[in-house]
Image 1 (cartoon, rainbow, N blue to C red):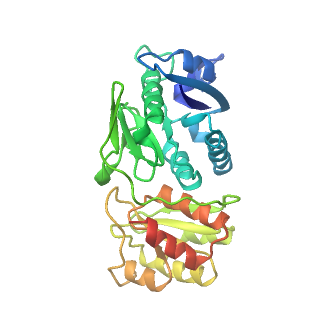
Image 2: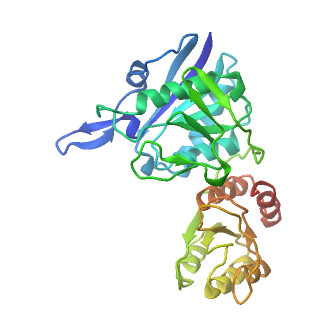
Image 3: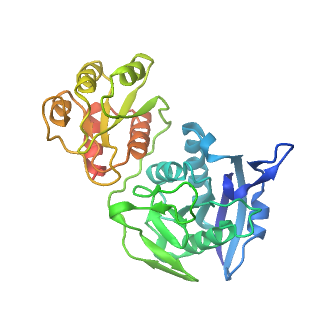
Length: 326
């Protein structure tokens, strides 16, 4: 018998309208979610851990860090073959990537959820959980790291992102593509991720800010982040990672003061690279900015938060982003 631990955290998959205002809130227990499953799950035992009940828009770094620790705790049990986490879709990709960075086990870790609440006649939650359980139980899924399984596809936590506010096929991995698919009881793995590494960080640094630039953006936000105590700042620049010239000047001062600045692109695909002068990416490189490869801004923030929690200095940050940024 294969045992899969089902960790529930709330989200749309555990939500239905309630209270005087009939707001949709997370209130459904893990036992109820387990009871909703259908399809062939023969040979798989599911044990429930009700971790929390929040909308994922309320998930923060300390809670997500604690979730990763709980996942690792269950996987350390020799009876447990894998973990499925039900989670709201708003920040699922972030909790999944944090788990990917922190959970060293080769056993599968699969995040899933729903776009339609549990009371909807066509809710997608039960089938997503069932497919996630099949994936977590599959020997072929070992060593793939943390994944998101949604609408029969599964994706590497590093690459996947939510692409649509409400459609059930919201999760995509852009130019990298999905890892594989769950077709009935068959788990088909098409590729295995290479840009993975885990860290035994004793804590997570919560004071890491993410700033997205727009045409003509001033240095107000980045300077405020620095002056108010940010320990690192991630900037989503234009194209290859170019800031505005005034932001580049601020980066030079901030890095000189010992606070790392990491550059990503606001483009959904492609890598950042220092190419342009006149206040662009090349000057940002000279100012000491770290380039994050093709990591999305939200993922770069998490990597920085983990590394700083592990005591990394700017040199180690630079080397690790070069290694894992692709």
